Length: 314
Image (cartoon, rainbow, N blue to C red; front, side, top):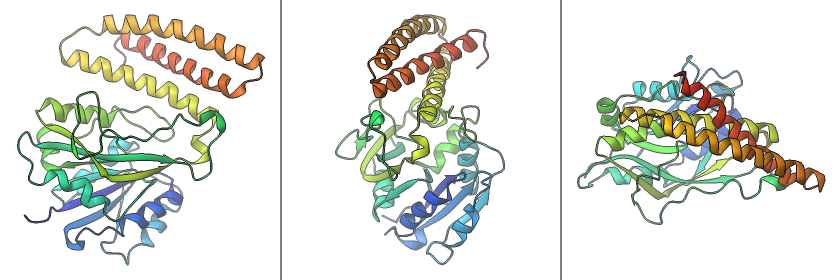
């Protein structure tokens, strides 16, 4: 069977330090050099991202720098699809590290599978902390490990957007990533990857997991602060509400029962977490107090988006 032609696209924004390490791992892939290309989609970076890409021009294949001026992760992903020449398009984060067989492992499930065809493949994602991790956050970042062998995932499990790939024809049949569900700049609101995977599954395709396509996901000190944890908790809760409401509306069901039950549960949880946070501060358990505060702020994210969704402003 001929080797699949693959496009690997790295979507990046102001992370030249990590991008350099990601590109160093990508150019070491043992995939046949003439069968894949490497794109770097620069989403308006103001650092030395372009210089970092230029430092790899002697590699085979050499990365192609592409500027995408529309802010947002999914704008970057869609630009990669527009520019890609491969039959399979791998979309990855700019802060991952991988072994030389990563690409071969990631695209292997697309070759020779019986129906239903594979619509998306994701690999294992293991968080690492190059700058260390505060004690109060230890245990909160866990590896994404669904199964020990390559195979399909049940509906409740989905690949992570940091490390996944699609056959080109999926985008031709089901459309591109929804840019309304997007991360822009420092905002952490998202959901474009899960919505795309849901469309793929609704079309009768399978989502597969390839444990051999393992990457290390670098989490720097700037994303391990209380401020970042609060922002992430709030925006991720908002994203979940938007995603759930969209699913209900697409299935012609009213979202009001979900919104009502989630609002009541979130309000009670918020009160409980605030009490727990205060109690932990009293007994000088600041780590537990921070964790309770983050969970309480997640409840605020639910309540905020529920209020917006209830009047159709999502």
